[in-house]
Length: 308
Length: 258
View: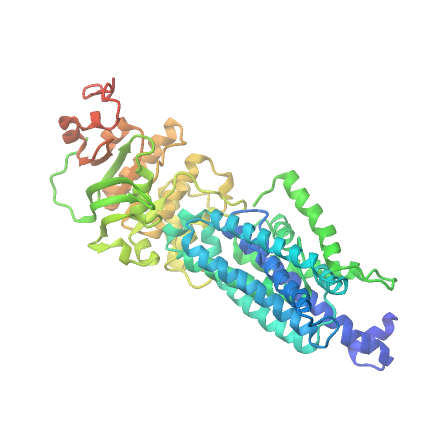
């Protein structure tokens, strides 16, 4: 697309219809989705890292993505086991999103129930990782028994993508992310109290059980919704909070949370631009690009041992 | 050694308290604490000193019995209600990088700050004054991860003062400190109890320090719990019952085990 025409289309001047079509139906919705996904996953990572005092915690550590994956796997491949094919059907897209969201929420619900029984956050963390492993195993089992067409639909979902969201889907995603964000901002006070450990936070008057619930619900709303619409996008949630800490040098969540959100959005737009392969016809899966950007950052953090 | 005869208001009572979560680790604790008192908790490793302090402060649940603060059962109080009366200082806290001392003390205003944690002007002044009191007046903007152990312990005490709870519990506040810092911290605690009328309860392994500085001592003995002034406990030979090993005898003139 000629840049002149792009500017014309944005400013409302006369532009070739194919340019404004691509711009308003594909590129801008995709960019908006990427912005929301980047910001949402990053602030989930930040909250998980503070809650679990673990620098490698991310939105998926408690099995949210594997829960979503299980939902999608059951939807795509489980149904075809009964002779119902969903791949390619009109409802497939909405079905995948709903299944992913239900899967993620079911796992969070389970974690919330267990969290009442577990005194400390580390036990909860280990429990979450175990749940993730179990769901991963079930997904593998389903994959083993499914047809190659269904398998391809599932694998495509796991690679992640920001495109293909309709305007109404973007609005739904926006609403869910908005609520998740509001809840996260409300969590700032408790997150700061948690910086000096659980015993300290409790002694300040923090109701730890409620705080954990609020953080888990915010994370599911944000990461669960993004995963449902865009697929499981890894590494952004771990890496971005660390980059924000390095740049802003302030652990106070009043600064760190908005900073992380902005950086996450910016990084995701960058990853999306790279995945478009400017000048090429192909588009790379977003998960590959986010790993290529995220993993070096995580390695750098480990090497410099700038851990939380 | 300070023997007070003055009647003081009792603020904390423990009635037949058993410690532990799934199983009892120590039972039959009967004790009380008053305003302006500094109390040391003594006992062998693993008897439950730290569990006792955490149980009083609501950080850990306890099994049986009743702990009352200002006549109210702690189990019936919400975390934020209890925090207005009791605060707990852990032995060591994880320290976040790039978190300022001022921001740390601002968390002490958790019950009074607004929904996002902003504090009032009065509390800002209170933080400044409290830092001066603990000798950290120029440290407001310091990153807490760069404080020495002694400085951090004083910062943690300052947080309790900002929280403005009547009872301050400290788990081995001098465990990682050198002698100079130990004395600074103990003197500070003594001053807070006697001049600000707070109730200070701390666990320690330094028996001599406890006898010299505290109004009362709680002993988690190997067989039973004992409470009393340092002098009365020495007279009763209570310190001989701290350890299971009966060959360890407490010498009341040397004030040490022989």
